Length: 315
Image (cartoon, rainbow, N blue to C red; front, top):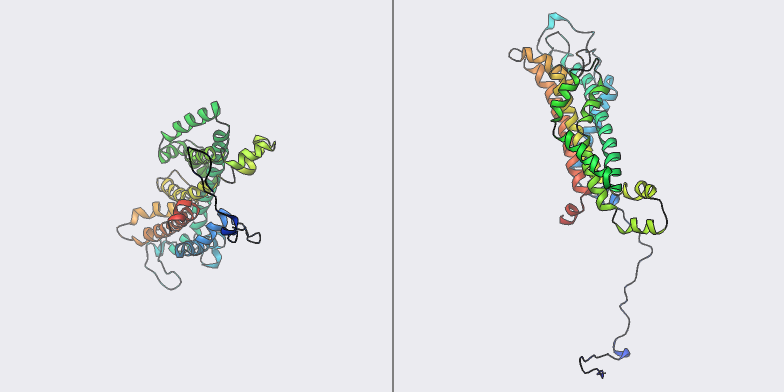
């Protein structure tokens, strides 16, 4: 019916001509899906995820139980009569310059290299998570101090800083190498977490928690951190491979793990003296190092794609 308003005319259809037969209904039986569920659905359909996962599980198994893969001692069976000798029965990869079995040393060297990488990643992620979350959520002078401190560490190349610090330490083991690597890399994790926390703290669920009287610290732990940790998981997965490479670099230069510790970096360093006459003793630990780093990089790529909402939307 036309309205009496002279500035605008409104028409209202009779009720019997617009029956309410198409009302949207909410399916209460449907289960809610979290971002982690969507991420897992994306991961399990990715061939790259399964390839990298199988490789990583195999590498972890080699590091934890090397006796399953070789019965040859990497140190006790060394004989100078077999110095740089070619492969033979029971020794498929030949011998090192000291007459040690190359295959056994590659197997047993997995543990030290992987231990440094995992320890450095855990320390790097925990320190970055704590500092980045606190700085991003509380802001103010604390955020300013953390940002300037991070800029100082960013100005120092991590490998160069590790070389300088490792050269003055009185003793070296897997823990000290991991700590030194984490000292010069934590600002990267802290900056990633800080950015995610700054975005999350202004979300509606945080405002709702504040309206209910939840303390700021509990909001940070229960709501902000769980919804900001995805970028850190991706960064940690990719960084683990980088830490393994950094350990091999330091050990190659003679300032990482001591020579008495079997690691891929030490084996590569010792094999460089015979690279012209017996290059295979350097080749095999280098291949093991490359495969391990590649596995973690592949896993980091698929995890990043699974946890990135924009990447999921474009698929």
